[in-house]
Length: 285
Image 1 (cartoon, rainbow, N blue to C red):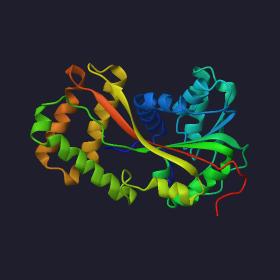
Image 2: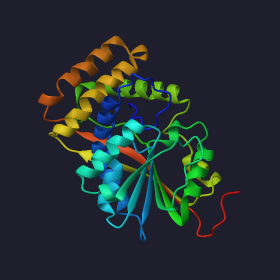
Image 3: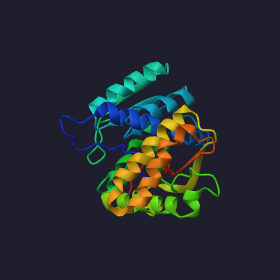
Image 4: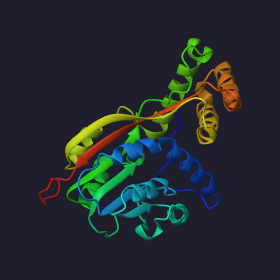
């Protein structure tokens, strides 16, 4: 699994923010069905949403579109990405209800109106102290408010049953290699983290932990193809030092045939955690 980065620290002056934003927008397009599934489960009126680690704003605009009575505050460490949020919101016709704030989850959040919904998509696994970060998100909620936390799920499914790369184990070895490198980079296995325990320690109640999937059926459309090719190529680049040369060659060959193969799918999984701040006003102990 390759990593859709949404947390931004210590990039140099020559960092390619446009390329990152483009990649994050593709990631968001692939998992948008999951966002819509989750939003459909949110109960009660939602007037203010805080989207932390918002990236280029694709999810923030989806939320604003799905919840027409809500204002969305999009928070990120990158001013360059926040500029992209304004463009995305304007294109979606929700610019008047989406505002941006520069902020870092590793530190106290800027003063903000209490949120009915806090959205943390693919970001908490990046922070050095998850419980402290989750306490900040807890305190950003109004009493009774909901946190939606999206994290890594199972590796994506791409190949049809019986594909030679499945039969000979190449695909399984590729996924294991990228998962091991990601865990090494993050200093943890993001799929195995006990997020419910962290949420409980941060003061949340009513934690629900479930896997959701976004399915892009064969034949893949242009967006899914545009996501899959760099996903495969980045995975090989990322795990080159732990992959057998033959496996790397076969995965690159697969990437080169994505546009001409009618049998490929993308089934992207995410772990979705929902938790509430208690209706009492007391913060976590």
